Image (cartoon, rainbow, N blue to C red):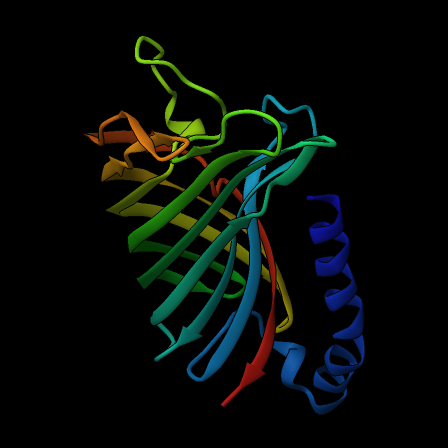
Length: 226
């Protein structure tokens, strides 16, 4: 996460000359985004249980169809492939993609508020490989018939939808900060779990819905204009 934040900060710094060019041409005299703008942002939950400043949620791109409507694409990826001991490797990686749409309700000066809707598609890949003992496909640790594997330790596929309300403030035409809260509902199918090729637990299914603050803080900048 620290590397991702540093990368994002580097992109912001590299965009400084473009910002200065906007100012010199008079483009930065009015705040907010408009038709044809491409925005890049990083979202997360500040001061979450992990103890850091920002618990990363999404890397998101937005394209404004008009001054009041935008399409967007959120991405999340967590690669966790860990050689725990010389003979044991644990993989528990997550990939998510979230295409969506925004309609902006208030657009006054540098302030905006909007409603948003997203589709959510995700996959978790989990396995445990051992060169000296049993290996597992479908879970990130050894299991027996009586052990219940948590959702965060088991391979799965999920999809659902999210609706939210957001607000943001633009500092000129280039940078902005804001936040978004919402409600999401989804379906998840957990994969079969195999130990050395023999099925140990069969697939399970569940539905989930909850209020989310995963994107309650965001920082971004205008990347391009078409």
